[in-house]
Image (cartoon, rainbow, N blue to C red; front, side):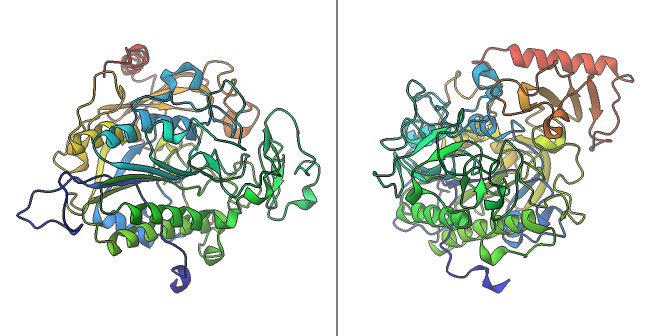
Length: 531
């Protein structure tokens, strides 16, 4: 598609740093010691392991992602620590499973929720900053803002936030784009805010005189929505929550991807001569799905496919910027997702009707919100041309492992009480071992449900009555998206012979189920300071 490059600004990634300063940021000669890499984490939102053509998708073409995969390693057994967004992002930045913090166990945070990482905590970006990195985040945040003692004031200094937990720079949207406030925040300030039109936000009652999707569906210019997503209408789309004011600051959905690209590339360009780390939080293919003009109709499976094409463009622009600045060879890029995919998620955007045979989960059972493989298995591509040889790996890896792995790569020793659930998988990432360094991973679903994968075995305990739809989960147990996350009886699967989790073999292997249940209990109850 020749028109995709157009005049869109480029996008940015997660970058790290160089061990020794160089006169020029060109690739070191073979005889020179290898400098530490820039590091970029590009974290998509609800992208499935089957959503890329390098993984077998035929209805969606992803040439830039395919090139990233061809230059590095594509993991087929990669996991998000949770089947929902906020807990996964918390776990990646802290190296701790979110369910260990009981208050955060069920939380899919609203846009006015307080910061869920304690300011001053030793986080992934803080570790890299201490190692000399410049750190930034662009795009989706969804980890809360403010101290929770008073209501977040979006008209003044919005803090604490990313800058208080290890980032030097941020250009973010507070939560998901289907939640108010629908604004960009740069560092501590809402962008383009008119002081005479102050912002007010509520998730408890309608504080605005503006129309809602529930009362005025005729004003929805794109598609209708369920009741949860039918509050204040912004840019022709009804959202979760109520917002008044801030009209000049409101984002346009059809400009989100270009903004992410522009601010990411700007971050990279301004810091190209020093080591940097950048987290790029993409909004796609999360709802509400809106494709920018060049991508409309470019897939064979409707709007959801089109916004994945948009993801591919964003990734490509980041890669082009690195190449143009001559820092691509020694930049570690990781592309992954915060949880598994989903089709219908509140908006009637024809994601189900237009699927056209496409398989977002790559045939795995379940979807986002669930502890089945389809809810937690995610794409995980890592490219570092100077160090990673191209390959496909079936070794187990988890987003939580970014903390300890990056720490090893940059030579920072972690205290024993830091990142308790993160493992150093640098040997796996670099291809220095073919063994599974991570022998197990705990999976976390809506309402605090847990499951354990150990080797090729997968154990799902029965869901406690009422667990799904608990306080703060954002789930209604009567909704089929969440009701299907309920496990009425314990399940055991052998993923080596049954990757689709079709046959519960717990009756044939009760001793294995008991062993895994005991292991899960031990992991859940272990001291947070012991790995």
